[in-house]
Length: 190
Image (cartoon, rainbow, N blue to C red; front, side, top):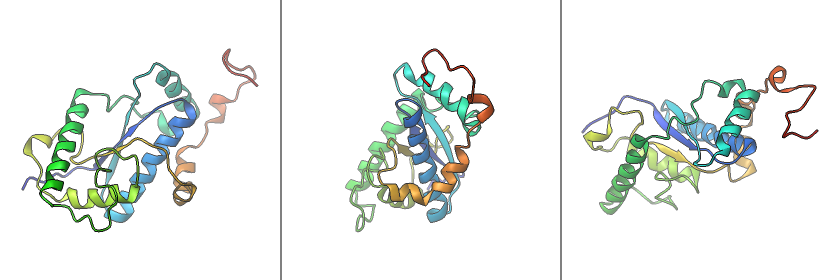
């Protein structure tokens, strides 16, 4: 049994402009908090920009407004390694599901760990079970944990946002000196 001694990687798939960036990163922060509080595991967040040119402007606005995002690499997970890991993880989860290695008693969506677009609780429970399972040796030692959590949605309910409101608010503290100007940019309206 090969184990790993690294934090759980949370890959946040970004999309859209500033509001969507905030929403997706907030979802990543929420998942990070769930993993910490429910599983007691350390985490790391890695961002994956969309394949559309507007991500650059959204990144610029996000980093300009929110100092905590400035050290983040918005394309850290835009790599061939991640694409391969994502494919391997999907195959591995499907194999483990076929072998009945997961207890699915309280899980509605057993595929949530492959691509978190639905129930956050299901993905965290799948991660809890998968974290201690034997993993293929060729997936360890890279830039991503195995398994990792791939977040591609904003928080689906206001109640979930309320659970992590303080955390999100602290993370998205606005740098007023950097963004409050007398004259707006040419593409801004006042």
